Image 1 (tube, one colour):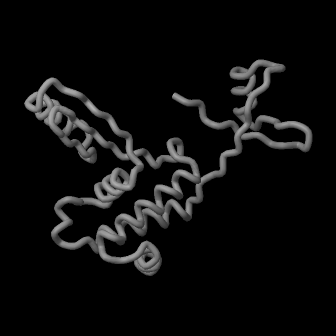
Image 2: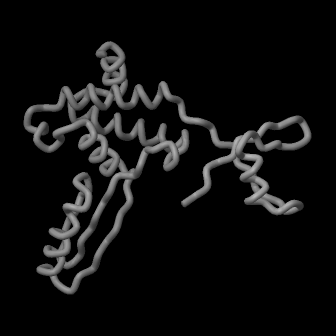
Image 3: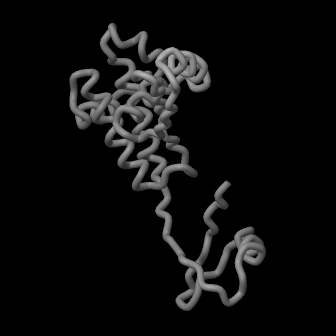
Length: 171
């Protein structure tokens, strides 16, 4: 597990850890050692909320023939993340097609949102990347948001801009 970022204050000469970060810095870092510092821009709560409002609007407007495939906005979100490249991929090479089919049947229930395919003797498992604050920073979240909204907009026959506009008026 990765340690959470520490909050620091720049005083014009040095960074000073704030609150609990001071105790953590004492435990984690060696005095005199050099460490790389990276600024993390916080994600916008407004952008996060806008994303989920647009997703809900797209889900409500899915064509009837797709409503079974996406029984909830979460199903739609995970599918769109996978289809737009924000996914983890795992391949399992099996000795035969029959074994690959059995492995796929075993793997499918482990993640109801995963896309599991079999080609010859290879099982491919795609799972959606997490969009949690810890897993995705601002830039990655915005990229995934734009890709997902673009993808779901095409499913309902509109543009991402139009979807965003309609989600803003629906509430």
